[in-house]
Length: 385
View (cartoon, rainbow, N blue to C red):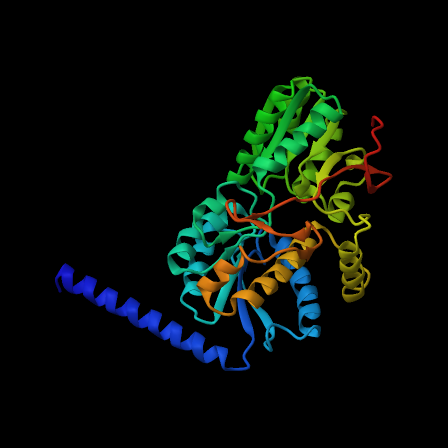
């Protein structure tokens, strides 16, 4: 077969697929089937706990959405595909979702590298990729089908640097960071801001997600004599680093990225995370009614369990998805356009949430400066640790 014949055949096949998809969506609109969202995220592997937390937040939001009548007479549902937050698997999932006419929007993946690997497929396929935990500043640059309710690290890390340097007075810093695209990007933004605020960077050390013994690294950090240790980590590795830091005699102030904020950080870290400072987008002591409603509903559904930030991110994402679908219906391009039209959606993380159309991220995230005191997260009172 000639190259021309092959191209003709491929074009014909694609046209047939698109026509079939359009017909299927039209037929769906007349049916009583649920509106289906695709979720790409970790249910197994090193980040499996976050997929479990997502499902809890999603399901709580869906209970409330269905109780309020659903979406234009339809129930809202999701199909969760386990990517392990692995870029190779997220790409395969993207191909599956794009070719399934029932999927009207995708949520995920958990990590920015896994999402960004799949972004070209979603962009070419005309399916919104709603990366609600994707803080890499380049995520939404992947195309006009990429939207996010995650605060970009370009905005997040200067807040942490200001807390560490300007508020806590730390001037010589050591940085431990996940050696991933997210971790390296976060480190770079933090370093730039910290230097602008007058701090010196004594040492930076990257580590892999599966690493469990940090003691040799922490000895090098200790010997550099910093007055502060910065953790760009998730809660499980952050808690382990804090424990081992104390074991090797590192008594300096620890400041951590908001990604450690979770009851699990306190549980896993124990006394070692006492006096750790961090910022967060979500804090349960916030008196706003959106926060109180979320916490009350979560505890009632999950036998008194305390929700954390990742539960809240997922809860907000599902409610935002519902608000978008109410405007855009089940047409994929109309859904993309609806993100620019939603205004003041009630959310836990942002209050009244509205997207900045240029960045395709939500404007105006909350920021609370916290410290661990007596085994609990508390608003920092300005007193030294």
